[in-house]
Structures are given as structure tokens and as C-alpha cells.
Length: 271
View 1: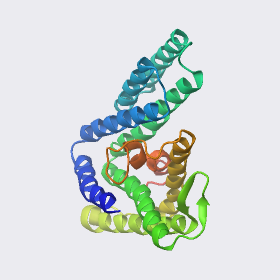
View 2: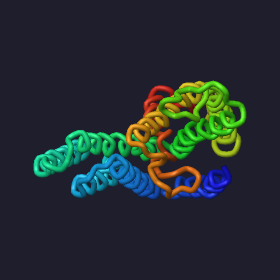
View 3: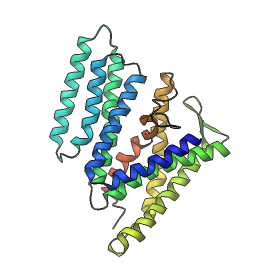
């Protein structure tokens, strides 16, 4: 538990500092996170062809920058080039590379970086983009932190023992509660110290958003746990003490970030 707390104390302020910098800093950070996460995934799932692995990692690093284009065409072109490369590499290496491994590499190097790229879209959404990014992280990570501590001390009923033996129903409910509380506090702080009388932060919408989004963070976590379970690995890496790899730390954002982006297009949360 101690390394986990120390990593959080160091990592969270670092992430906040990156978010506060000009938007390009977040794009670079998301690109790096995506590339490392995909590298961990293709390594742990035994994708044994270096050309396919390297191609997947490069594409994962490119996706966040494509979100800055403001046009769908560069995204379509990049996906087509990536698909063409993967198809050609699979055909060339058909004797040594299983199609299932290649398909998984293609899937994860598309889905996870694309999901993380929504952080860049949130950051550039409007003048409140910085708050939206922080809110997405707070929802996911407060849910994770709350579930971890409440599940550790009070958990009795297993949630999905075949996928993630340590997760409990009590931890799930506690994580949702902590996520809602943390999000509401963030909204109140943003209202009173940043926007003040210039805008109104709709607290009840933020609370409802966190209530719905917190379970999505658990689904992302369970999805990553399922991958590890089926490939008989404990963690995706060891780059973050107490947490494992980059994918182990950011899996809870997989569904939360794109969902938040969808929501703010209909409910701006800030009037």
C-alpha cells in the first residue's frame, strides 16, 4: 500500500502540472501514455512479431495528435494506412504470427489511444476544457481509490472473483460514493475560485455524471483485468510503483473519458 500512496503523491501533482501547461503538453503526454500502454499490451499478450508491435506502438502515439486536426479525413487516412500495414505484415508473417494476436494488437492500439485522445478533445472543447479534463480524471481515479481502500477494509462480498479476485461489492459502492463526493467538491472549488460570478457550475449535473461514470471506470478496470487473467500476468508492467504499468493505472479512463465528452455536448455542466 505504501508504494501505491507514494506513487499517487508524486504522480497526481505531475499530471495536474501537465494539464495546466499549454494544451500541446497534454497531447504529448497522452501520446506517450498511449504508446507505452500499447507496448505493454503487445508484450504481455505475446505478440511475437516486432514489426507488428512497432507499427502498433507508432500508431498509438499518432492518434492523440490526429485529434488536433479538427477534421475527420486525417483520422481516416491514418487508420487506413495502419490497417493496410497490419494486413500486409500479417500475410508476410503468416507462419509465425497468429491472426488472433494481430487482431488484438490492432484492436487495443486503436481503442485505448482513441479513448485517451478524448482528453485532448476535452482540453480544447472550450474555455472550461481544463476543468473537464480534471473532472474525468477525478471521476475515474476517485472511484479507483475509494474502491481500493473501502474494499480493503470493509469488503466482504466478491464482485467478479473469476476476473478480479480483490474487487468487492462494498468497494464498488464506496468507490462510486467517493467519486461523486470528489467530483462535487471539484465543481464547488471551480465555481468559487475560478469562474465565480462569470458562470454557473451545475453541481447536480456533475453529481449525476459521476454517479453514472464511476461504474464505467470499474468496467474499464475489469476489462484490463480480464486481459491479464487470460494471459496469466499480474500487471502490465512495473513502471509505476504500487500500481504496475501505465495500462494498469489508466485503464479506468477507457470508458469514462469518451462518455464525458459525449455528455458535455448535451449537458455543458457549466452555464
